[in-house]
Image (tube, rainbow, N blue to C red; front, side, top):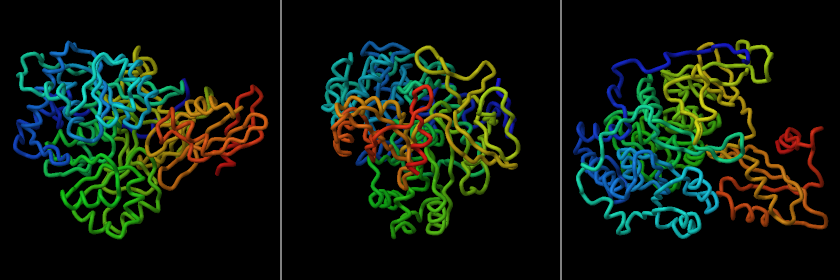
Length: 519
C-alpha cells in the first residue's frame, strides 16, 4: 500500500435527517416533487412547460409502457437524446421501471455507439430522429428502437396506469451505466447505483452556499448524457422541485437571451461557456437574474474567473469530480467564498486524502506537496461493467488518478493527471483510441497523441504523425479520417508531420518530450 497522508475529512455518509431522508430510488424524487409542488413548472423545453404533476404522470405512463414491451428489472435502455423533454421522461421512466439507464453521447459516431450498445447489452434504444440515420448500423443490431414523436413513443406515453410497475427498491441496485474512458483506452461503463446518485445529491444540498432552492430556475445547456448535468444539475432541480430550462446547443448570445427571458437564477456550466460569455458586451445585463454560477468538468482560467466577477459582480464557483463519484467530490460552494485556481473543498460526506503517486516506498506527501487524490464516500460507483472490477478497495477508498495539492484550510488545487487522458470541454479523450484510428490511414506509419492547452476547451488533441515513406498526408486529410470514426471532440485539432518519434528503451513512445515541444 502506498504511503498516504489524510489531508481533509468529513463524515463518510450524510447525517440523518438530510434533504433526501427516506428516499432510496432516484425516481422517487420526482414523485416527491409532484406531491410537494405539483402545479409548479418543472421543465422548460421549447414550447413544452409541464408541471411537476404532469411530468410525473408522463413518467408513470412511460415506465408502464417500457414494462409492457417485455423489459424486466435490470435490463439496459440506451438513451441517445439531446436536451429536450423526452430525455427527462426517458431517464426517470427507465429508473421507475426498475431498468438501467445508459446515457449515450449524441456526438458519437455509428462505430462508437455500436460499441457501447454491444458492451452494455442494451435491449432498447431511445434515439433522436435527427440522429437515427447516422446511427443506422448501430441501431440495426438493437432489439427495439423508439424515436420520440413516432407512434411507438406516443404509445409508450399512453396512460395505462402504474399497475405494471412494481414499487422501486433502489439502494444498491444499478441505476445507470455511464461510460467513461479508462486505462484500457476503451470506454468503460461506470456502474452507478441509486445509493451513489442519491448520496451525491444529498451531499450537494449541505453546502454553505445553497446549490439549489425551490425558487430557482436553472439553465441546463450542458448535455444531459454527461453525469455532471444529469445528476448534479437535473437531479438537484428535482430534489427541490425547482425549474429546469433545457437548451440543446450552446450559443453564447442565444443562451444569454434565454437567461434573461426565463429569469434564470442558477447556471450549471463549464469553462468554455464562461470564456464565451465573458467576451460579450451584454454579459452584465444577461446575468442580472443569476444568483449562482458553477463551473466543472475542466479548470477555469484565472483571467476568466476575474472577468466574470468584475462584469457580473458575482463569482463563479468551481468544483471537481468524476463519473465514478456521481460526480462531485469537491466544490467551492462548501465554503462561503471561492478561491481562484481552487476547485473547493471536499463535500460533506466525502473523505479525501493524498497519497504518494510515484510508487511503493515513496515518501508521503508533506504539507503543500502534491499527491494522488484518493476518496471515499457513499457517492462512489460500484465498479466497472459488467463484473464490478476497478471499484473502491475493501476499505471503500478509490484512487482517482488525479494529482493535487491541498492547503491548510482544505482547499484543493488540481495539478495534473496520472494517466494520459486529455480533457476537452470536460469530456475524456483517451490518446490510444485516437492513435488507433489514425494508424488505419494508409499514409501513417506511426502516431502519438498528446493534449495541448486550449483557451476555449481547456485542452485540445494534437497528433504527431510519422508518414510512410514518400507519403505526405495533409493535416486536413488526417483530421477528416479521424472524424469518420470518432466524435468531433476526440479528433485532433492539429496534426504535425515528423520524421520520427522519441522512444524509451522498451520501444514505447516517450510522450514527455512531445508535450514539452507542444507547449
